[in-house]
Image 1 (cartoon, rainbow, N blue to C red):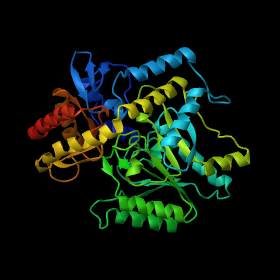
Image 2 (tube, one colour; image 1 turned 90 degrees about the horizontal axis):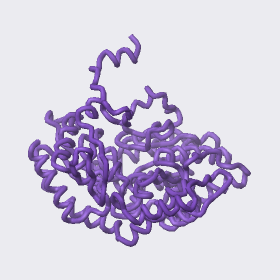
Image 3 (cartoon, rainbow, N blue to C red; image 1 turned 60 degrees about the horizontal axis):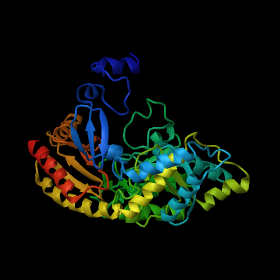
Image 4 (cartoon, rainbow, N blue to C red; image 1 turned 45 degrees about the vertical axis):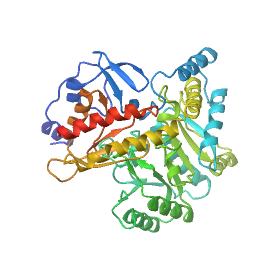
Length: 441
């Protein structure tokens, strides 16, 4: 029996959703039975087509940092559409892209000087992977093509390149992703002494075994989709040193952690991270329009320039003028309304409110940074992560109580990624719902 027919034979036929949209990463039966159609949003709240209102503990897909319907961002978009509805960056430029690029570089880690715009986070990771591999061919080290990432809990996207470096199981081989240019190291453990020592040793051994063949390492400062797991500082410092000493580039995946999500503008600031490449999306324009970016050092850009070779990569909608205008307005809102600091203050408050849940039989851990919080559930069997059924039961329990949370299936938990505008009173509401749901168990 073939792999495909074996899979079909073992899996019950799910319900058929009435909605013709083929939803990403979504169980068919869940969508048919529990799917919600969102019709409007304002501030931290959204409303469905049945009139139910929810506090969005997910901020869309963690990207609506300034809240839904912020007038300043809407005005920036509509004003730009009236002025220049579309502009390409293929052989041309436009003012919103240039202005945004300069703004991004002014707040980014030092040493980054060039910006390539994309339509999202996964495409920014694709850009980074292609560029670093081409860079080493241009600088006389064509054998450097391996990209190193973490073997569990990491998430970098679902495009062919980005899914190959993603640590979570998203059927990479079944979808035909090329894994030959990727090496994985263990996800660092806090329980090590010092924290992350096992993973750091594995990386050092890999550097020796693949000497001269590793192009880059890609890391998320906080493993978001994997369960909101902050990387141990000792591990990050050790990886950074090994990269510097061995000519390996460091890619910081700030797609989920950027723009105030962790209580600082970028997640790498918790470690004084000095990457060669930074990839961005999600909160870059509060999720109002598709946009991502990859930021590079001058040395990387200059290798292409000196060779007289253009970057043979791009997207029709990469750097769309309205999307860039929304990002400029978002940066203004973040600054004017103090949302990065609000993320830190309200995030710390919410973590304190949720800390007592650790004593519950239904909760294994509560952790986070800023307004990026993971609640790891205790499985009924006591071993391994909580099951998909247990996680989704908690997700639905929160929803019925007016709170949207995100399932973190890899670690068996639920995640909170609300808009950075969340108030202390709204944080209390979140804590009260989670108190009820984890008590119900």
